[in-house]
Image 1 (cartoon, helix red, strand yellow):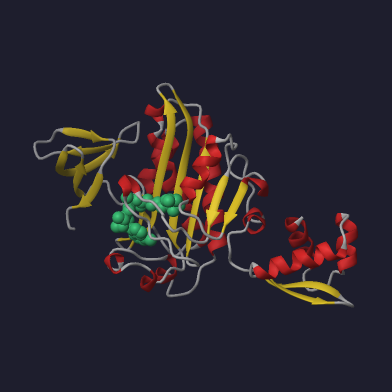
Image 2 (cartoon, helix red, strand yellow):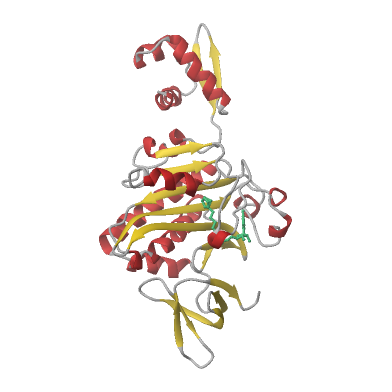
Length: 329
Ligand code: BT5
């Protein structure tokens, strides 16, 4: 009902819509309409209400509400309608929330978004700093019909979708992908991705892609330890605020398109786009993984998304997991 009222008010624009007309159309009482208007105001919508003329929507908040995201989406699998989008003001981690929904049978394409995370997670038990207001924290659920050994390109797909989505909203910025799926602007991290999988030997039950982006985050909102390595879209945009809704919707839309392409054509197009937007290949790197540190030149991705590194004596070695440190760092 809330979504319908938002749509009706947006459609009328500056023309007031009477409480009675809304109540009649939705088959509810005027008191119910009034209560929903109050709830919308509490969520940051500015609604002018006058007993004689009715209601007008004057301002829409830049919050990741299903109705706002849905208005910008024309997706087929990821959030094909607003009921797939679950908005929270504060969660521990959107990946955790979505994981329990997935375990209870949530459909492919379910999305969880939050304004703030109290225990945002990075890879390998690390943290993702997730202050309120400035960032986008979202997780989406896929149920790809593949064995877990083939899931790597889908994690790279998340980085490609985020990269293209950000470029679509802010064409003047050129984020680049650091293997496997960090997004950097001017060498600083603006977006991190955590993909988690539940699978048995032969089949992925589900994959959750969690994406965190510093959109309007100020450096002062982040811990001191990150202030020299992190940035935000706003900072890179000449300190001009960026619509979080536009960024989140563009990423979901591009994710949808890339995932549909992946289901039809396999991993090759994803890997090709990853190569197009990466800032890793051709560089001198050190790869840190469980078996130690390996130095060389990052040469390519193999067909399964592993990073192929050329060692000092020319041997090529694929890495399917690990941390990249650039030679100059
Ligand atoms: C990541 O891990 O970069 C994955 C981050 C994924 C976050 C999203 S938000 C929605 C969803 N729900 C979750 O709980 N998580 C996902 P990793 O590559 O391990 O990088 C973590 C490192 O990035 C930290 O150790 C810090 O050094 C740095 N970092 C933490 N918060 C940051 C931020 N806001 N901006 C830039 N760098 C940050």
